[in-house]
Length: 410
Image 1 (cartoon, helix red, strand yellow):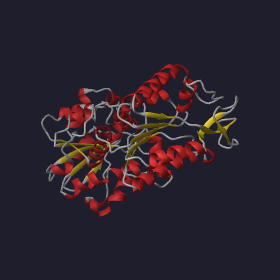
Image 2 (cartoon, rainbow, N blue to C red; image 1 turned 60 degrees about the vertical axis):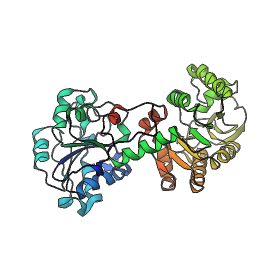
Image 3 (cartoon, rainbow, N blue to C red; image 1 turned 30 degrees about the vertical axis):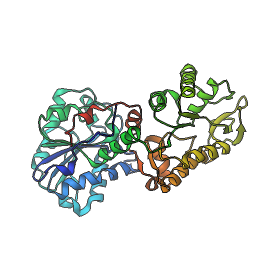
Image 4 (cartoon, rainbow, N blue to C red; image 1 turned 90 degrees about the vertical axis):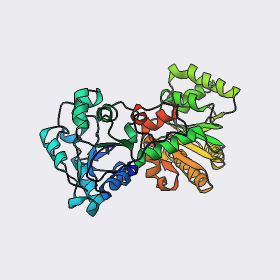
């Protein structure tokens, strides 16, 4: 279980001059035709990267991208565009004005030679770790090869902190007693997410959405004793509503989770946390972007499916959120990618902006809700937008991460 005392040594607290810093970053960015369509994950790592380069460190970056087969180089998943983009962002802040990309293999002779030839203030990016199946298998030989690239290890990849990949766990362990620190991004993620659970300013409200109840059940179970309000939207709401005996038409329901949903509602009824469910819905007759929307209050007619929360629910949820002291939001309220079914998610975002302006701590827990905050242009108006979907959700579930526990204490 996380506590607010989680505190790790940071990259700016270790001397890096003349030393090779092996930094795990999350450059798992979206690509189209070989071009990056959203560089946010690269930009989020800039503070840690610049800290090393400005102090004369020799920076070796490593990341994964996508889901290659693990049988060697695949052009579709090369990190080379990330090296180019990072060089553009750094400009004169990196020696030579560019980020080196020495090889299409992260541990071959060319990569090793380039690492060993790095000068102070220079930076290189290794090729996609997952071109090696060993990365996700905990392979000790692969760990030893990666560990040889660094004198200092830095974890600034919160998006993969919940995974026991070689680059996250076995490689830093293979570095023995060499310094193992966190980057600014990981430090901030832990501070916000663990702090929200350990000592939230009240009222503490949690907004959960998305498609599946099964994805959020452990988080709900962990948060019920801690939160004052849990507001549920998205397709997962229809499993809870059906568990109450409500008619949900053709809305998505996880039939095998009805008992679990009933148990959560029963548990909440005996405690101080109030679970809020949608009272009206924006519906359509088909799961299609151009389907005609209509509002249903209460039950949903046969053949209709709920694709967003309705206006009465938007008002009720907004009232709760605007008076909250701490808010954690994970998951959209509807199919926000389609304009006819985006109002609920937009309204939740607007309520978080208002709450932040009034002094609340507002945290968006990654994944689709982080994408929505970016799309609606509100990310900079919130306290923190997480870069880790799965990692953020597992932290809300109260899980510890081996990749963080192994880092040096502050």
